[in-house]
Length: 313
Image (cartoon, rainbow, N blue to C red; front, side, top):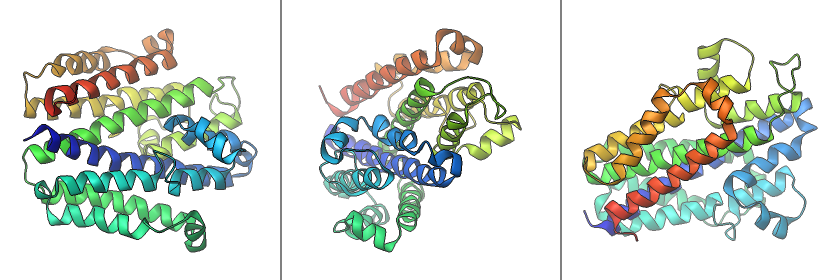
């Protein structure tokens, strides 16, 4: 497969995964903000999408004060925001169009119809129709895309590069989300599972945004605690959005593409680190320090994937 085609398939999937991640974060933020205690800390919750996306400075310049409605408008439909849902969908559609001959008609139509449905939508239009319904619809479209990808694509390089994009983006998002959360969370003991009330609701947002609340309850059967969130989302390989699960999948895909690629050493090193480390060790090192280091490694792995397979210098 030509490097340019591989690059487009890789970024098509990354953009679609990034859309779902942002939609989930906004949707759970809206839910948490409606709770009485969380509402008092609404600005803290709505800062999270801006911090994770790295667009807080642009938002403050264009919108000023942080509020739920303004953040939703900025993250859903503002084409001046390079990581808004609308902009990312436009990018994914262009990636798909450039590699149309590698995609099944189901995958192409899923992306194209989703884009056509939101192309002319403003945030005012979304509010009139119901923001919550729009968010739910976007999550459904994301699942449809991944279902079409898995259910209709030939088990060849096209699917492998798409899956690689999904896994890399998922790992990057989980690390960024945890990094923002753990750098801000206060650890004073209270009656709510060792967390300040504000941090308790922020932790609820984290677990729901990562679609891991049920996994947490099934694994720990306890109140929400920071160390246990970290253990679940960093080390538990059976949780789909955990760092270990994502790195394991990246290793599997790269091994199928080219087991001798130079990037494999970095992936294996990171995989071994996640397999052998304990949460107590990460706590001693500092969770925020570990997550920053993990994000840097993922950035390097992503660049080396593009260098090894996509001729990106």
